[in-house]
Image: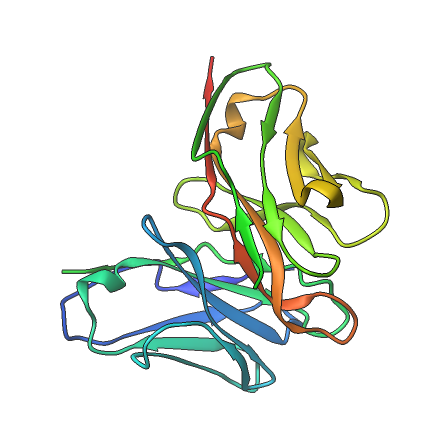
Length: 114
Length: 119
């Protein structure tokens, strides 16, 4: 079974630009969540989607948004990039149904904002 | 509100020595607890998890953890460390929306403990 796939793995943007990151969950997993990882703040929850609905959102500004498609693939978007948005963005999936909250993580998309 | 504390930011051990990484959580009910490991440039891999039952849980790569409700702790242990165990370790507690058949839909992570292994 293929794992969680994130694209792109690395990207460099400049302040003010926007970025879209993509995540394909494990086949059969209907829940996708996103986390931001930085050296200063650690791992922070961004949002979680299940069956195309956002069920939970972390404490991030409105510049951070996401969506989920009918095939469970998800994208997150960050608009008007700031230097502080430089981070590793991790996507995780779980079944969302008969599960015990175990998340399966992708390898992440490393965003550098210059 | 749920929270997780990992008191040790860095730990260095010699190869073959025993290891214990500390984790304390704050949660009202029976927590769903996890340990994840992250190698440089990689995502997080689940080592083990605890939901109920036996308080000593076994995981992958020879790791185990013990849930102690009275101490609000979930410490990770390994009897003999290998050089390949050098990585960052994260303790996490389930939070957010309770799922119908158990668990929650998000995790709150501790700050992590970076493990270095000396030959």
